[in-house]
Image (cartoon, rainbow over all chains, first blue to last red; front, top):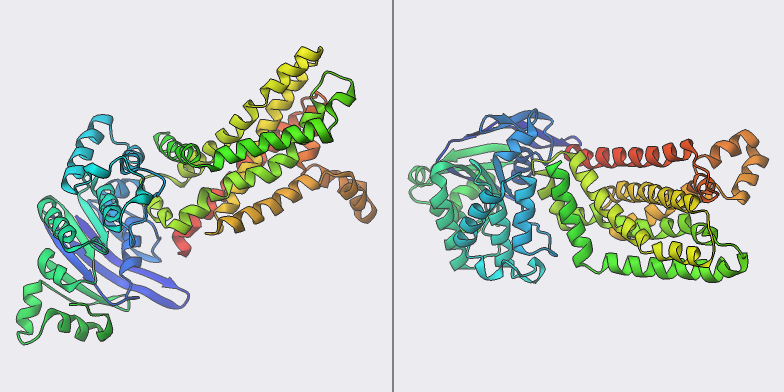
Length: 243
Length: 245
């Protein structure tokens, strides 16, 4: 469903993402881990068509992000880092805008809006200006926008950042519910989440994949160590570990 | 087309739910009134016409329209919503045109609210209504050119104030190039041919004929061409974010 082949991005002489390849199949939730500056966000931006790669490509459910961008983007749901939103809009207006931009019919919008509103418990704030909402609600509105059109591929950059434990559990539950039909790539700093949500974890450092396994696989290879220590050893950046 | 409409609805909603558009329209109308009645000495002309009203349009558009356009792209970049926008299945052209049309709509609403002036001069005498209609049409086209300029320059920065200053500066060049003092200086330095060329890139020059009731095709082409050029630049600058970010 999501196939990344040889993605490369250079800023000046420095390769931020260096010949990175990765495949996420339907039903997989892949944790995309790495220290700050490892190239996670740049990779995600290239996958989503926000940034053009210097080399390589990403296929989104069969559509190339470099040569058939609009078709690829129509099959993709993306939650950017920081979950940026139009603060003057209401969640209802924001979702309506996304539905218009994604050319959803009125009926399809009604059904999908009801689905995401219920799943993310947004009902009470649907007509409140986003600028007045708490960080947790804002994150959920952004997540609702990413899944509104029921895309086969989801790319989520720090989806639970800023949520309280209950809200995090709700997001974990939602991802578990929808993951059967989708390929999901999640960037996170929270290693507990990887063990909870992900079927596989990929660790990147300096733009390259340095290790890859299931959470259980990582732990079985190093039975005497926590996942946080495995991550730290792979990246050599102990200070970024938050177990 | 649906993409343009989606962007247009979002932008026009922002203008209408926020205070920016209302403040713009109110201050624009107030300024236009003061310029027309006090500085333009409307009643002292002794004629039923709107020349004192139209002569200030280029200058007021030059100041007010960059203020309307400054947030179109700069705010997207400042808030980070540009990232969201560029990952939607929309072409850059749809985004550029949708935003431009929304800002132009605000300018057209402001222009439409001056129509009572037209009614007033008809009440006072027998003006040349065809000339007034032409001046309104050309003012609307001139507004489109100023907005496209402001929108394009807004795509270069994430700071609205910077976008406004940049747009105002460039708009001033495109306006003041037609002033007699500028043209006489160009004649002295480079000769009358150069002055004629400089005059032809001025909003003022192309609006003067319309104020006299003369429809000049080259002026229509100038405004439409300038608008298309800045919208193209706008698209290129937005698209460049994909490669440069």
